[in-house]
Length: 198
Image (tube, rainbow, N blue to C red; front, side):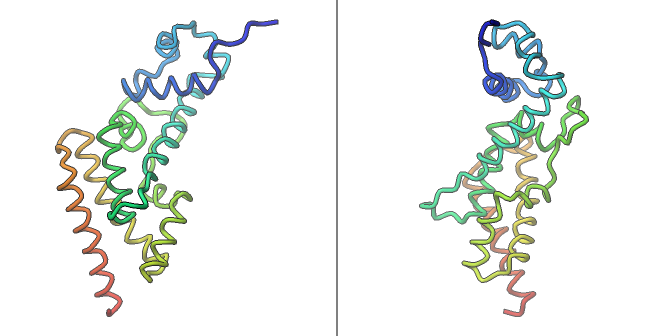
């Protein structure tokens, strides 16, 4: 009877995700992952058919981690849901810099045969957002289609902010960011009122 593996596939994936979080996508090799786990490469290769499959599954783990990070909504907060999601997105760019680059900026050397970068539209179409956007639509009396359009415009603005922070072109100033996002959201609502004749 073969010996029980020291690490499960899930534990290897978590370690691989942590490797990318700490050192970036380029550090994700079977050899480096084995060194981090203090094992040979064989147990890793027994869980994944190829290094490509490993990278794909780690990317999917990173994407899921990002979704959970984004959806941390505090029901007791005075901040609106779009503002909370926006702030979470920008915090992710700052606090999970390597993952943000891999998921959204296709950093050099990260090319692969699987889809590696999300578009804003994919983010907006994420089914996890549907209940939130529908609730916001009902509460505000704005159609679901218009709410999604407003949220997409806000996310384009937020993504620009996040990229500047991820590339260390802009420093993180949460008070200023929050103020800017509120101004953007309010301007979108005023624009909606004007175009609808309210």
